[in-house]
Length: 452
Ligand code: SAH
Ligand code: SF4
Ligand code: F3S
Image 1 (cartoon, rainbow, N blue to C red):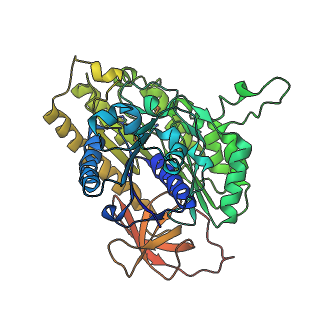
Image 2 (cartoon, rainbow, N blue to C red; image 1 turned 120 degrees about the vertical axis):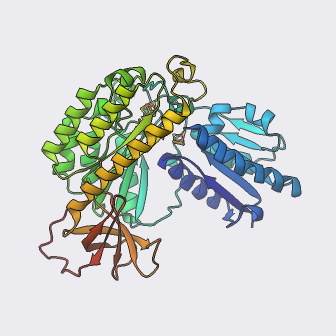
Image 3 (cartoon, rainbow, N blue to C red; image 1 turned 90 degrees about the vertical axis):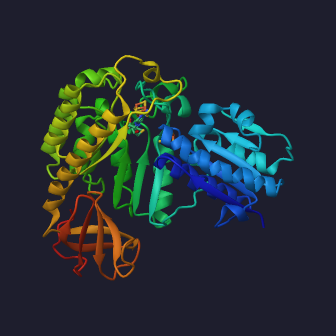
């Protein structure tokens, strides 16, 4: 039996695509090799969001080159966003690569592997949903649902619109059927994926042909339809865009039992001037207004975010505004990134006000300190509460304890007896900025525990 090895870089979108790649390869009769050196087909699902992503991948690709030299009949394949961003150039720069394909072309990998092709092939159209391929889930009780591909925004720093194309939504009936099938297979938690999930469905109305009733569904309506599916206990999504965060979606968190009390709302900067330069199409006031609406409808919700430090032109005053927003919102967690110029993006051409690297690093340190202090303060509110935890497996730090996630998306390490995939009730005894720690409480299933 032939064996494959797949290394995944980047976001959940790529993790999901990789599950589909694995499902597809296994349906072709390939088995997974635990090490790259044992594989007949060496694959990479790549990311290009920041320069560090490129360099991490390239160091791995070096090993593939060596392995290919040792055994030339091996196949080396490169998929994903980095591949899309360099296209055919990949074969000139890395002649040992046999097949390259963008995120929309995963099914072409199967075509390549089953053909007698002896020449290298590249596939870079934007056309497919990997969501239509069979999945091999990492955990049987958690599933991804790709609701759309691509992005119609034009954030000036971002490579994604050029690697994933224009936004295309999948029809709601197809999504409902996919989640119902997942539920039947034992999935309890589903995470909806899209670059801008809350603009979901806007493109569907224009596609209906004459005489056909358009299947017009907003993101909030989609949440409602998925919430109604028996067996799905938790719904998450990532990422919404603040410009499209409407009250109906926020209300869904309060009204639909399975929609979790966690919203990841990317800020990027607290300075309206920087947001404009980033072409985010909202300003500080509009962002804070969205946060106020969330706090009004779902007072206890966890809020997390993404922030970029050192965008060209960012002054000390702009950065202070970011710190002010972080202080004011009080995020439960934040992903912080140093601005990285990306090929083909307009921000990469800005020469005025480029922030020197040591200044970026110093700002990053100040930001991280504040983010961690806030996260720790926020986490304190869970101490003494009994929370519902979806058990994921053994704790990474202590194999005798368990690990899982709360509806608020906090990781909990706890002592208990629950099995992976079960919902346990855990009393939180301590909290850090990153994790909670506690003990399982055995309560009757029909007990009076509040669900959240
Ligand atoms: N579609 C998602 C973001 C996907 S990229 C959204 O709009 O929220 C994830 C995060 O990477 C972004 O939110 C941004 O904070 C960061 N990022 C993207 N491009 C970057 C760049 N060139 N330099 C630094 N950080 C970047
Ligand atoms: Fe990139 Fe902006 Fe689209 Fe997010 S919304 S993927 S940051 S262009
Ligand atoms: Fe994701 Fe990286 Fe592509 S973050 S969308 S895999 S560039």
